[in-house]
Length: 449
Length: 152
Image (cartoon, rainbow over all chains, first blue to last red; front, side, top):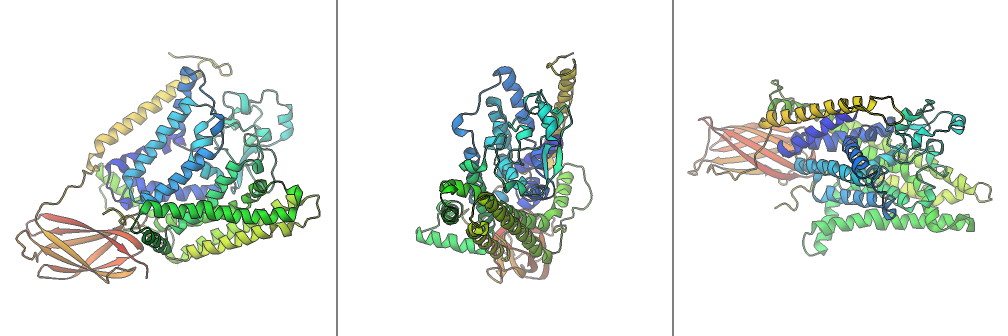
Protein backbone atom coordinates (compact mmCIF):
# COMPACT_ATOMS: atom_id res chain seq x y z
CA UNK A 1 0.00 0.00 0.00
CA UNK A 2 2.94 2.33 0.63
CA UNK A 3 4.37 2.11 -2.89
CA UNK A 4 1.17 3.29 -4.65
CA UNK A 5 0.88 6.16 -2.18
CA UNK A 6 4.55 7.00 -2.75
CA UNK A 7 3.87 7.21 -6.48
CA UNK A 8 0.86 9.43 -5.83
CA UNK A 9 3.01 11.59 -3.55
CA UNK A 10 5.61 11.88 -6.33
CA UNK A 11 2.92 13.02 -8.80
CA UNK A 12 1.58 15.50 -6.27
CA UNK A 13 5.02 16.99 -5.66
CA UNK A 14 5.75 17.14 -9.37
CA UNK A 15 2.48 18.89 -10.21
CA UNK A 16 2.73 21.17 -7.19
CA UNK A 17 6.15 22.39 -8.27
CA UNK A 18 5.70 22.48 -12.05
CA UNK A 19 1.98 22.34 -12.77
CA UNK A 20 -0.62 25.11 -13.02
CA UNK A 21 -0.51 27.27 -9.90
CA UNK A 22 -4.27 27.39 -9.58
CA UNK A 23 -5.40 25.26 -6.63
CA UNK A 24 -8.57 23.76 -8.18
CA UNK A 25 -6.57 22.61 -11.21
CA UNK A 26 -3.52 21.14 -9.52
CA UNK A 27 -3.07 17.60 -8.24
CA UNK A 28 -1.15 18.81 -5.18
CA UNK A 29 -3.88 21.00 -3.74
CA UNK A 30 -6.82 18.84 -4.84
CA UNK A 31 -5.08 15.62 -3.76
CA UNK A 32 -3.85 16.86 -0.39
CA UNK A 33 -6.42 19.35 0.90
CA UNK A 34 -9.49 17.67 -0.49
CA UNK A 35 -8.98 13.95 -0.96
CA UNK A 36 -6.26 13.09 1.52
CA UNK A 37 -7.99 14.90 4.38
CA UNK A 38 -11.45 13.66 3.44
CA UNK A 39 -10.40 10.06 3.01
CA UNK A 40 -8.33 10.10 6.22
CA UNK A 41 -11.31 11.02 8.40
CA UNK A 42 -13.62 8.62 6.56
CA UNK A 43 -11.10 5.79 6.97
CA UNK A 44 -10.78 6.59 10.66
CA UNK A 45 -14.56 6.55 11.01
CA UNK A 46 -15.24 3.26 9.26
CA UNK A 47 -12.02 1.33 9.95
CA UNK A 48 -8.99 2.79 11.66
CA UNK A 49 -5.58 4.31 11.10
CA UNK A 50 -5.29 3.08 7.51
CA UNK A 51 -3.33 6.12 6.33
CA UNK A 52 -0.44 5.50 8.73
CA UNK A 53 -0.55 1.91 7.50
CA UNK A 54 -0.13 3.12 3.91
CA UNK A 55 2.05 6.12 4.76
CA UNK A 56 4.48 6.93 1.92
CA UNK A 57 6.87 8.50 4.45
CA UNK A 58 7.50 4.99 5.81
CA UNK A 59 9.79 4.32 2.86
CA UNK A 60 12.31 7.14 3.56
CA UNK A 61 12.02 6.20 7.24
CA UNK A 62 12.95 2.63 6.35
CA UNK A 63 15.94 3.79 4.32
CA UNK A 64 16.98 5.95 7.27
CA UNK A 65 16.60 3.00 9.61
CA UNK A 66 18.82 0.81 7.40
CA UNK A 67 21.49 3.51 7.29
CA UNK A 68 21.25 3.99 11.04
CA UNK A 69 21.63 0.31 11.74
CA UNK A 70 24.58 -0.11 9.42
CA UNK A 71 26.48 3.13 9.88
CA UNK A 72 25.49 4.37 13.32
CA UNK A 73 25.36 1.08 15.24
CA UNK A 74 21.64 1.30 15.82
CA UNK A 75 21.50 5.08 16.26
CA UNK A 76 20.78 7.23 19.27
CA UNK A 77 17.83 7.07 21.62
CA UNK A 78 15.46 10.01 21.51
CA UNK A 79 16.57 12.55 24.16
CA UNK A 80 14.49 12.17 27.31
CA UNK A 81 13.38 15.81 27.16
CA UNK A 82 11.47 15.24 23.92
CA UNK A 83 10.39 11.64 24.51
CA UNK A 84 6.77 12.78 24.55
CA UNK A 85 4.20 14.53 22.38
CA UNK A 86 5.35 18.12 22.98
CA UNK A 87 7.45 18.37 19.76
CA UNK A 88 4.54 17.05 17.68
CA UNK A 89 2.15 19.38 19.48
CA UNK A 90 4.30 22.43 18.70
CA UNK A 91 4.59 21.36 15.05
CA UNK A 92 0.86 20.77 14.85
CA UNK A 93 0.05 24.26 16.14
CA UNK A 94 2.63 25.77 13.78
CA UNK A 95 1.07 23.86 10.92
CA UNK A 96 -2.45 25.05 11.76
CA UNK A 97 -1.09 28.61 11.95
CA UNK A 98 0.86 28.36 8.68
CA UNK A 99 -2.18 26.84 6.96
CA UNK A 100 -4.14 30.03 7.59
CA UNK A 101 -1.33 32.57 7.46
CA UNK A 102 0.07 31.46 4.11
CA UNK A 103 -3.21 30.15 2.63
CA UNK A 104 -1.60 26.76 2.07
CA UNK A 105 -4.89 25.47 0.66
CA UNK A 106 -4.47 27.90 -2.25
CA UNK A 107 -0.84 27.18 -3.11
CA UNK A 108 0.20 24.07 -5.06
CA UNK A 109 3.82 25.15 -4.76
CA UNK A 110 3.80 25.41 -0.96
CA UNK A 111 1.83 22.17 -0.71
CA UNK A 112 4.51 20.37 -2.70
CA UNK A 113 7.25 21.80 -0.52
CA UNK A 114 5.45 20.65 2.62
CA UNK A 115 5.37 17.11 1.21
CA UNK A 116 9.07 17.32 0.33
CA UNK A 117 9.92 18.64 3.78
CA UNK A 118 7.97 15.75 5.26
CA UNK A 119 10.02 13.21 3.31
CA UNK A 120 13.25 14.92 4.33
CA UNK A 121 12.24 15.13 8.00
CA UNK A 122 11.12 11.49 8.14
CA UNK A 123 14.42 10.40 6.62
CA UNK A 124 16.60 12.66 8.78
CA UNK A 125 14.94 11.91 12.11
CA UNK A 126 14.89 8.16 11.66
CA UNK A 127 18.45 8.10 10.36
CA UNK A 128 19.64 9.50 13.67
CA UNK A 129 17.16 8.30 16.29
CA UNK A 130 15.77 4.85 16.96
CA UNK A 131 12.34 3.85 18.23
CA UNK A 132 10.22 5.24 15.37
CA UNK A 133 11.06 8.72 16.60
CA UNK A 134 9.40 10.46 13.67
CA UNK A 135 6.04 8.67 14.00
CA UNK A 136 5.92 8.76 17.77
CA UNK A 137 7.24 12.22 18.60
CA UNK A 138 7.33 14.39 15.48
CA UNK A 139 4.70 13.63 12.84
CA UNK A 140 1.69 15.99 13.17
CA UNK A 141 -0.35 13.96 10.68
CA UNK A 142 0.32 10.82 12.68
CA UNK A 143 -0.84 12.48 15.89
CA UNK A 144 -4.06 13.51 14.15
CA UNK A 145 -4.52 9.90 13.04
CA UNK A 146 -3.82 8.55 16.54
CA UNK A 147 -6.39 11.02 17.89
CA UNK A 148 -9.02 10.06 15.32
CA UNK A 149 -8.32 6.35 15.74
CA UNK A 150 -9.55 6.63 19.33
CA UNK A 151 -13.01 6.74 17.75
CA UNK A 152 -12.35 3.96 15.21
CA UNK A 153 -14.13 0.62 15.17
CA UNK A 154 -11.00 -1.47 14.54
CA UNK A 155 -7.94 -2.11 16.68
CA UNK A 156 -4.86 -4.27 16.35
CA UNK A 157 -4.90 -6.45 19.41
CA UNK A 158 -4.34 -9.85 20.90
CA UNK A 159 -6.96 -12.50 20.20
CA UNK A 160 -6.30 -14.74 23.22
CA UNK A 161 -4.35 -13.36 26.18
CA UNK A 162 -3.70 -16.84 27.56
CA UNK A 163 -1.51 -17.60 24.54
CA UNK A 164 0.60 -14.52 25.30
CA UNK A 165 1.09 -15.70 28.88
CA UNK A 166 2.69 -18.87 27.56
CA UNK A 167 4.77 -17.09 24.90
CA UNK A 168 8.51 -17.04 25.63
CA UNK A 169 9.89 -15.32 22.55
CA UNK A 170 7.77 -12.11 22.61
CA UNK A 171 8.41 -11.56 18.91
CA UNK A 172 5.78 -8.82 18.79
CA UNK A 173 8.14 -6.52 20.69
CA UNK A 174 11.61 -8.12 20.48
CA UNK A 175 11.82 -9.76 17.09
CA UNK A 176 13.15 -8.34 13.85
CA UNK A 177 9.58 -7.17 13.18
CA UNK A 178 8.85 -6.18 16.76
CA UNK A 179 6.87 -2.99 17.30
CA UNK A 180 9.06 0.04 16.64
CA UNK A 181 6.78 2.20 18.74
CA UNK A 182 7.30 0.02 21.82
CA UNK A 183 3.72 -1.22 22.04
CA UNK A 184 3.87 -4.65 23.69
CA UNK A 185 0.71 -6.37 22.51
CA UNK A 186 -0.33 -8.12 25.75
CA UNK A 187 -0.22 -4.74 27.54
CA UNK A 188 -1.35 -2.59 24.61
CA UNK A 189 -4.64 -0.78 25.12
CA UNK A 190 -6.39 1.00 22.28
CA UNK A 191 -5.15 2.74 19.16
CA UNK A 192 -2.89 5.48 20.57
CA UNK A 193 0.54 5.39 18.92
CA UNK A 194 -0.46 2.42 16.75
CA UNK A 195 0.38 2.97 13.09
CA UNK A 196 -1.44 -0.18 11.94
CA UNK A 197 1.84 -1.27 10.33
CA UNK A 198 0.95 -4.92 11.05
CA UNK A 199 4.56 -5.74 12.01
CA UNK A 200 3.33 -7.37 15.22
CA UNK A 201 0.71 -9.36 13.28
CA UNK A 202 3.43 -10.76 11.03
CA UNK A 203 5.84 -11.26 13.91
CA UNK A 204 3.55 -13.30 16.16
CA UNK A 205 4.40 -16.98 15.60
CA UNK A 206 1.00 -18.03 17.02
CA UNK A 207 -1.11 -15.87 14.71
CA UNK A 208 -2.57 -14.43 17.90
CA UNK A 209 -2.69 -10.75 16.85
CA UNK A 210 -5.19 -9.33 14.42
CA UNK A 211 -7.24 -6.39 13.27
CA UNK A 212 -10.26 -6.83 15.50
CA UNK A 213 -13.56 -4.98 15.86
CA UNK A 214 -14.41 -3.07 19.02
CA UNK A 215 -16.78 -0.49 20.43
CA UNK A 216 -15.53 2.91 19.16
CA UNK A 217 -14.31 5.32 21.89
CA UNK A 218 -14.71 2.68 24.63
CA UNK A 219 -10.95 2.79 25.18
CA UNK A 220 -11.39 6.33 26.52
CA UNK A 221 -13.59 5.23 29.41
CA UNK A 222 -10.88 3.51 31.45
CA UNK A 223 -7.35 4.53 32.38
CA UNK A 224 -5.28 1.37 32.66
CA UNK A 225 -1.53 1.26 32.14
CA UNK A 226 -0.94 1.29 28.38
CA UNK A 227 2.18 -0.22 26.90
CA UNK A 228 4.44 2.43 25.38
CA UNK A 229 2.26 5.21 26.79
CA UNK A 230 1.58 4.75 30.50
CA UNK A 231 -1.60 6.07 32.10
CA UNK A 232 -3.41 8.80 30.18
CA UNK A 233 -4.07 10.83 33.33
CA UNK A 234 -0.30 11.05 33.93
CA UNK A 235 0.53 12.32 30.45
CA UNK A 236 0.00 16.11 30.34
CA UNK A 237 1.53 16.17 26.86
CA UNK A 238 -1.14 13.79 25.55
CA UNK A 239 -3.90 15.71 27.31
CA UNK A 240 -2.61 18.95 25.74
CA UNK A 241 -2.45 17.29 22.32
CA UNK A 242 -6.03 16.08 22.67
CA UNK A 243 -7.20 19.52 23.85
CA UNK A 244 -5.52 21.24 20.90
CA UNK A 245 -7.00 18.78 18.42
CA UNK A 246 -10.48 19.11 19.94
CA UNK A 247 -10.51 22.92 20.10
CA UNK A 248 -8.46 23.09 16.89
CA UNK A 249 -11.34 21.44 15.04
CA UNK A 250 -13.54 24.41 15.93
CA UNK A 251 -10.87 27.05 15.27
CA UNK A 252 -10.06 25.50 11.89
CA UNK A 253 -13.71 25.50 10.84
CA UNK A 254 -14.27 28.99 12.27
CA UNK A 255 -11.47 30.25 10.01
CA UNK A 256 -13.62 29.33 6.97
CA UNK A 257 -16.68 31.46 7.74
CA UNK A 258 -17.50 35.16 7.51
CA UNK A 259 -17.20 36.23 11.17
CA UNK A 260 -13.47 35.43 11.25
CA UNK A 261 -12.84 38.18 8.71
CA UNK A 262 -14.80 40.67 10.79
CA UNK A 263 -12.81 39.61 13.85
CA UNK A 264 -9.51 39.93 11.99
CA UNK A 265 -10.49 43.33 10.68
CA UNK A 266 -11.39 44.48 14.18
CA UNK A 267 -8.08 43.22 15.59
CA UNK A 268 -6.28 44.90 12.70
CA UNK A 269 -8.11 48.18 13.42
CA UNK A 270 -7.01 48.06 17.06
CA UNK A 271 -3.45 47.35 15.94
CA UNK A 272 -3.63 50.47 13.75
CA UNK A 273 -3.45 48.65 10.44
CA UNK A 274 -3.60 45.15 9.00
CA UNK A 275 -1.14 42.84 10.69
CA UNK A 276 -2.01 39.30 9.53
CA UNK A 277 0.50 37.47 11.70
CA UNK A 278 -0.58 39.19 14.91
CA UNK A 279 -4.28 38.92 14.03
CA UNK A 280 -4.00 35.19 13.50
CA UNK A 281 -1.70 34.74 16.50
CA UNK A 282 -4.36 36.39 18.67
CA UNK A 283 -7.13 34.14 17.29
CA UNK A 284 -4.99 31.02 17.72
CA UNK A 285 -3.89 31.97 21.23
CA UNK A 286 -7.51 32.59 22.17
CA UNK A 287 -8.92 29.48 20.48
CA UNK A 288 -6.20 26.96 21.19
CA UNK A 289 -4.73 28.06 24.54
CA UNK A 290 -6.67 30.68 26.52
CA UNK A 291 -10.27 29.49 26.01
CA UNK A 292 -9.49 25.77 26.25
CA UNK A 293 -7.32 26.41 29.31
CA UNK A 294 -10.07 28.37 31.08
CA UNK A 295 -12.90 26.01 30.13
CA UNK A 296 -11.01 22.85 31.04
CA UNK A 297 -9.72 24.36 34.28
CA UNK A 298 -13.24 25.46 35.28
CA UNK A 299 -14.81 22.07 34.49
CA UNK A 300 -11.95 20.24 36.18
CA UNK A 301 -12.11 22.47 39.26
CA UNK A 302 -15.85 21.80 39.77
CA UNK A 303 -15.35 18.07 39.25
CA UNK A 304 -12.45 18.03 41.70
CA UNK A 305 -14.46 19.84 44.35
CA UNK A 306 -17.28 17.33 44.02
CA UNK A 307 -14.96 14.33 44.01
CA UNK A 308 -13.15 15.40 47.14
CA UNK A 309 -9.52 14.84 48.15
CA UNK A 310 -9.32 11.48 46.41
CA UNK A 311 -9.57 13.24 43.05
CA UNK A 312 -5.88 14.14 42.99
CA UNK A 313 -4.41 17.35 41.56
CA UNK A 314 -6.34 19.46 39.05
CA UNK A 315 -4.13 18.54 36.05
CA UNK A 316 -4.83 14.85 36.70
CA UNK A 317 -8.60 15.47 36.77
CA UNK A 318 -8.43 17.46 33.54
CA UNK A 319 -6.06 14.84 32.10
CA UNK A 320 -8.70 12.21 32.73
CA UNK A 321 -11.84 14.00 31.57
CA UNK A 322 -10.41 15.80 28.53
CA UNK A 323 -10.61 12.49 26.67
CA UNK A 324 -14.40 12.70 26.90
CA UNK A 325 -14.17 15.49 24.31
CA UNK A 326 -12.40 13.31 21.73
CA UNK A 327 -15.55 12.02 19.95
CA UNK A 328 -16.94 15.55 19.65
CA UNK A 329 -13.62 16.91 18.34
CA UNK A 330 -13.39 14.07 15.84
CA UNK A 331 -17.02 14.69 14.86
CA UNK A 332 -16.17 18.31 14.08
CA UNK A 333 -13.15 17.37 11.97
CA UNK A 334 -15.29 14.78 10.22
CA UNK A 335 -18.03 17.32 9.52
CA UNK A 336 -15.57 19.91 8.19
CA UNK A 337 -13.46 17.63 6.02
CA UNK A 338 -16.51 15.74 4.77
CA UNK A 339 -17.97 19.07 3.62
CA UNK A 340 -14.91 19.74 1.45
CA UNK A 341 -14.73 16.16 0.22
CA UNK A 342 -18.41 15.86 -0.64
CA UNK A 343 -18.41 19.30 -2.27
CA UNK A 344 -15.54 18.60 -4.60
CA UNK A 345 -14.60 14.91 -4.64
CA UNK A 346 -15.23 14.54 -8.36
CA UNK A 347 -12.97 17.47 -9.27
CA UNK A 348 -10.12 14.96 -9.10
CA UNK A 349 -11.41 13.51 -12.40
CA UNK A 350 -10.84 16.62 -14.57
CA UNK A 351 -7.62 17.41 -12.71
CA UNK A 352 -6.24 13.96 -13.52
CA UNK A 353 -7.57 14.22 -17.09
CA UNK A 354 -5.89 17.59 -17.46
CA UNK A 355 -2.63 16.22 -16.04
CA UNK A 356 -2.79 13.20 -18.37
CA UNK A 357 -3.59 15.47 -21.33
CA UNK A 358 -0.60 17.69 -20.56
CA UNK A 359 1.77 14.72 -20.54
CA UNK A 360 0.25 13.24 -23.69
CA UNK A 361 -1.72 10.38 -22.16
CA UNK A 362 -5.27 11.67 -22.68
CA UNK A 363 -6.94 13.16 -25.72
CA UNK A 364 -10.61 13.39 -24.67
CA UNK A 365 -12.54 16.30 -23.24
CA UNK A 366 -11.55 17.41 -19.75
CA UNK A 367 -14.76 17.24 -17.72
CA UNK A 368 -14.49 20.46 -15.73
CA UNK A 369 -18.19 20.27 -14.95
CA UNK A 370 -17.66 17.49 -12.41
CA UNK A 371 -17.57 18.49 -8.76
CA UNK A 372 -19.88 17.53 -5.91
CA UNK A 373 -20.49 13.99 -4.77
CA UNK A 374 -23.88 14.75 -3.20
CA UNK A 375 -26.53 17.45 -3.73
CA UNK A 376 -25.78 20.70 -1.91
CA UNK A 377 -28.85 20.44 0.32
CA UNK A 378 -27.52 17.20 1.81
CA UNK A 379 -24.36 18.83 3.14
CA UNK A 380 -25.63 20.45 6.32
CA UNK A 381 -27.62 17.39 7.45
CA UNK A 382 -24.53 15.23 6.93
CA UNK A 383 -22.32 17.69 8.83
CA UNK A 384 -24.87 17.96 11.64
CA UNK A 385 -25.08 14.17 11.85
CA UNK A 386 -21.28 13.97 12.28
CA UNK A 387 -21.43 16.57 15.03
CA UNK A 388 -24.42 15.04 16.85
CA UNK A 389 -22.76 11.62 16.66
CA UNK A 390 -19.59 13.06 18.15
CA UNK A 391 -21.49 14.86 20.90
CA UNK A 392 -23.34 11.66 21.76
CA UNK A 393 -20.04 9.75 21.96
CA UNK A 394 -18.62 12.48 24.19
CA UNK A 395 -21.61 12.42 26.54
CA UNK A 396 -21.31 8.65 26.90
CA UNK A 397 -17.55 8.90 27.43
CA UNK A 398 -17.95 11.62 30.09
CA UNK A 399 -20.47 9.54 32.05
CA UNK A 400 -18.34 6.41 31.75
CA UNK A 401 -15.19 8.21 32.88
CA UNK A 402 -17.13 9.65 35.84
CA UNK A 403 -18.39 6.18 36.74
CA UNK A 404 -14.81 4.91 36.77
CA UNK A 405 -13.71 7.85 38.88
CA UNK A 406 -16.49 7.38 41.42
CA UNK A 407 -16.37 3.58 41.60
CA UNK A 408 -16.36 2.53 45.24
CA UNK A 409 -17.22 6.02 46.54
CA UNK A 410 -20.50 7.66 47.50
CA UNK A 411 -20.14 10.48 45.02
CA UNK A 412 -22.80 10.53 42.34
CA UNK A 413 -21.22 10.04 38.92
CA UNK A 414 -23.71 12.37 37.26
CA UNK A 415 -22.84 15.16 39.70
CA UNK A 416 -19.20 15.18 38.65
CA UNK A 417 -20.10 14.79 34.97
CA UNK A 418 -22.20 17.97 35.02
CA UNK A 419 -19.56 20.51 34.01
CA UNK A 420 -18.29 18.24 31.23
CA UNK A 421 -21.79 17.71 29.88
CA UNK A 422 -22.25 21.49 29.90
CA UNK A 423 -18.95 21.95 28.05
CA UNK A 424 -19.90 19.31 25.47
CA UNK A 425 -23.29 20.93 24.86
CA UNK A 426 -21.70 24.38 24.60
CA UNK A 427 -19.19 23.10 22.03
CA UNK A 428 -22.00 21.35 20.14
CA UNK A 429 -23.89 24.65 19.88
CA UNK A 430 -20.75 26.48 18.75
CA UNK A 431 -20.11 23.75 16.18
CA UNK A 432 -23.63 23.96 14.78
CA UNK A 433 -23.40 27.75 14.68
CA UNK A 434 -20.22 27.45 12.60
CA UNK A 435 -21.58 24.77 10.26
CA UNK A 436 -24.87 26.51 9.60
CA UNK A 437 -23.07 29.52 8.11
CA UNK A 438 -22.00 29.69 4.48
CA UNK A 439 -18.37 28.83 3.95
CA UNK A 440 -16.20 31.62 2.65
CA UNK A 441 -12.71 30.72 1.52
CA UNK A 442 -11.17 34.16 1.70
CA UNK A 443 -7.74 35.34 2.64
CA UNK A 444 -5.73 34.56 -0.47
CA UNK A 445 -5.66 38.18 -1.63
CA UNK A 446 -5.99 39.93 1.72
CA UNK A 447 -2.36 40.72 2.23
CA UNK A 448 -0.84 39.84 -1.12
CA UNK A 449 -0.75 43.25 -2.68
CA UNK B 1 24.59 -12.51 -5.66
CA UNK B 2 23.78 -11.08 -2.23
CA UNK B 3 22.73 -13.60 0.33
CA UNK B 4 22.52 -13.39 4.05
CA UNK B 5 20.85 -14.41 7.24
CA UNK B 6 19.50 -12.32 10.08
CA UNK B 7 19.33 -15.16 12.56
CA UNK B 8 15.63 -15.77 12.20
CA UNK B 9 15.21 -16.06 8.49
CA UNK B 10 16.14 -18.65 5.99
CA UNK B 11 19.43 -18.03 4.14
CA UNK B 12 18.89 -15.95 1.02
CA UNK B 13 15.78 -14.16 2.28
CA UNK B 14 17.60 -10.86 2.78
CA UNK B 15 19.08 -11.23 -0.68
CA UNK B 16 15.63 -11.68 -2.18
CA UNK B 17 14.33 -8.68 -0.26
CA UNK B 18 17.22 -6.53 -1.44
CA UNK B 19 16.62 -7.59 -5.03
CA UNK B 20 12.92 -6.78 -4.70
CA UNK B 21 13.73 -3.40 -3.12
CA UNK B 22 16.20 -2.75 -5.96
CA UNK B 23 13.55 -3.51 -8.60
CA UNK B 24 11.01 -1.24 -6.89
CA UNK B 25 13.64 1.50 -6.64
CA UNK B 26 14.54 1.22 -10.33
CA UNK B 27 10.85 1.30 -11.27
CA UNK B 28 10.34 4.44 -9.19
CA UNK B 29 13.34 6.15 -10.80
CA UNK B 30 12.05 5.23 -14.27
CA UNK B 31 8.60 6.62 -13.45
CA UNK B 32 9.98 9.86 -12.02
CA UNK B 33 12.43 10.40 -14.89
CA UNK B 34 9.71 9.53 -17.39
CA UNK B 35 7.32 12.00 -15.84
CA UNK B 36 9.97 14.69 -15.78
CA UNK B 37 10.45 14.27 -19.52
CA UNK B 38 6.84 13.72 -20.50
CA UNK B 39 5.60 16.38 -18.14
CA UNK B 40 7.18 19.28 -19.96
CA UNK B 41 3.74 20.08 -21.35
CA UNK B 42 2.50 20.47 -17.80
CA UNK B 43 5.28 22.75 -16.66
CA UNK B 44 4.36 26.37 -16.17
CA UNK B 45 6.85 29.13 -16.63
CA UNK B 46 6.85 31.89 -14.08
CA UNK B 47 4.32 34.58 -14.85
CA UNK B 48 5.78 37.38 -16.91
CA UNK B 49 4.35 40.90 -17.14
CA UNK B 50 2.00 41.23 -20.09
CA UNK B 51 3.45 43.60 -22.70
CA UNK B 52 1.05 43.19 -25.60
CA UNK B 53 -0.35 46.70 -25.18
CA UNK B 54 -3.99 45.57 -25.07
CA UNK B 55 -6.01 46.87 -22.13
CA UNK B 56 -8.80 44.87 -20.55
CA UNK B 57 -10.78 46.35 -17.65
CA UNK B 58 -13.45 44.61 -15.67
CA UNK B 59 -16.54 45.90 -13.89
CA UNK B 60 -18.50 43.57 -11.67
CA UNK B 61 -22.19 43.87 -10.91
CA UNK B 62 -23.34 43.81 -8.23
CA UNK B 63 -20.28 45.35 -6.66
CA UNK B 64 -18.95 43.79 -4.51
CA UNK B 65 -20.08 40.50 -6.01
CA UNK B 66 -22.26 38.19 -3.92
CA UNK B 67 -23.09 34.49 -4.24
CA UNK B 68 -25.57 33.81 -7.04
CA UNK B 69 -25.96 35.27 -10.51
CA UNK B 70 -23.49 38.00 -11.37
CA UNK B 71 -22.54 40.11 -14.33
CA UNK B 72 -19.15 41.14 -15.68
CA UNK B 73 -18.57 44.00 -18.07
CA UNK B 74 -15.27 43.78 -19.93
CA UNK B 75 -13.90 46.80 -21.75
CA UNK B 76 -11.26 45.82 -24.27
CA UNK B 77 -9.02 48.19 -26.21
CA UNK B 78 -6.06 47.65 -28.52
CA UNK B 79 -2.58 49.22 -28.07
CA UNK B 80 -3.78 52.36 -29.89
CA UNK B 81 -6.68 52.75 -27.47
CA UNK B 82 -9.36 51.74 -30.01
CA UNK B 83 -12.15 49.43 -28.84
CA UNK B 84 -11.78 45.81 -29.96
CA UNK B 85 -15.28 44.90 -31.05
CA UNK B 86 -14.83 41.61 -32.85
CA UNK B 87 -13.01 39.48 -30.28
CA UNK B 88 -14.34 36.11 -29.12
CA UNK B 89 -14.24 35.98 -25.33
CA UNK B 90 -14.08 32.94 -23.05
CA UNK B 91 -14.51 33.61 -19.35
CA UNK B 92 -13.69 31.13 -16.60
CA UNK B 93 -13.93 31.74 -12.86
CA UNK B 94 -12.09 29.51 -10.41
CA UNK B 95 -11.95 29.72 -6.66
CA UNK B 96 -8.57 30.08 -5.05
CA UNK B 97 -8.97 26.78 -3.20
CA UNK B 98 -9.34 23.23 -4.40
CA UNK B 99 -12.64 21.43 -4.68
CA UNK B 100 -14.93 23.80 -6.54
CA UNK B 101 -15.70 23.31 -10.20
CA UNK B 102 -15.10 26.33 -12.43
CA UNK B 103 -17.87 28.74 -13.43
CA UNK B 104 -17.93 29.56 -17.10
CA UNK B 105 -19.27 32.93 -18.20
CA UNK B 106 -21.57 33.47 -21.16
CA UNK B 107 -21.27 36.59 -23.31
CA UNK B 108 -24.75 38.09 -23.48
CA UNK B 109 -23.98 41.34 -25.29
CA UNK B 110 -21.06 42.90 -27.15
CA UNK B 111 -20.79 46.38 -28.61
CA UNK B 112 -17.97 48.87 -29.14
CA UNK B 113 -15.42 46.85 -27.24
CA UNK B 114 -17.73 46.36 -24.25
CA UNK B 115 -18.70 42.78 -23.51
CA UNK B 116 -21.38 41.83 -20.99
CA UNK B 117 -20.97 38.41 -19.46
CA UNK B 118 -23.30 36.43 -17.20
CA UNK B 119 -21.56 34.29 -14.59
CA UNK B 120 -22.61 32.38 -11.52
CA UNK B 121 -20.72 32.77 -8.26
CA UNK B 122 -21.21 29.39 -6.59
CA UNK B 123 -19.52 30.12 -3.25
CA UNK B 124 -18.30 33.06 -1.24
CA UNK B 125 -14.56 33.51 -1.15
CA UNK B 126 -11.60 34.41 -3.33
CA UNK B 127 -11.95 33.87 -7.06
CA UNK B 128 -9.75 34.23 -10.12
CA UNK B 129 -11.54 35.27 -13.28
CA UNK B 130 -9.57 34.34 -16.39
CA UNK B 131 -10.60 36.10 -19.60
CA UNK B 132 -9.22 35.04 -22.95
CA UNK B 133 -9.99 37.11 -26.01
CA UNK B 134 -9.37 35.56 -29.42
CA UNK B 135 -8.81 38.31 -31.98
CA UNK B 136 -9.88 38.20 -35.61
CA UNK B 137 -6.27 37.48 -36.62
CA UNK B 138 -6.12 34.47 -34.27
CA UNK B 139 -4.05 36.06 -31.53
CA UNK B 140 -5.17 35.27 -27.99
CA UNK B 141 -5.00 37.95 -25.31
CA UNK B 142 -5.47 36.73 -21.75
CA UNK B 143 -5.88 38.47 -18.43
CA UNK B 144 -6.53 37.26 -14.86
CA UNK B 145 -8.61 39.25 -12.38
CA UNK B 146 -8.63 38.28 -8.69
CA UNK B 147 -11.79 39.18 -6.77
CA UNK B 148 -13.62 38.36 -3.58
CA UNK B 149 -17.22 37.18 -3.64
CA UNK B 150 -19.27 37.70 -0.49
CA UNK B 151 -22.05 35.68 1.10
CA UNK B 152 -25.59 37.01 0.66
